[in-house]
Length: 230
Image (cartoon, rainbow, N blue to C red):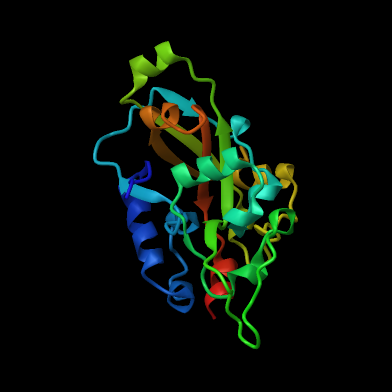
């Protein structure tokens, strides 16, 4: 099986991602100071710890990030009509059979009618979960000459997470109900103090199904996780 491209994070962020992934909702709530790593979605992303001091050759700020409403939340492969979008998401992210009850939490902008067995809450077919949480997109201009020079270099994706995203009354939810401007203000708010970066390899960008097109199902949503499994 092909290994999806790695997304590199610093050591403290990586440790938090691993901790969050191995504890359930109630255990996570007992630790109020979880750190910024709590926002990252290990279900979809192949996170790896940076073992060197990053020296990125390219930096992509929030100004060029896209948060299309139709690509947020629960997306099934059969609910997304654009084949290029499907291929790109599958290149950058892990996909797997949809968890129990996830069909009830679909993004209505990209929904798929799930047929259930009679008198049972089970789908009659295997459903591939293409994405969950929040998906960030970049469309980077790629020239072959530049690609040859920077093949092994890192690209930094910078985010400034709004304080409101961590509050109990957060109204940013991955269900297609937020505008792109609202989502961008949440994750790329230049006045926010919660600054975090992730790093990807230039060669993975130029080897994407559409060179230069990045779609990372990068951010998780605490209550969506809660809604699926309890």
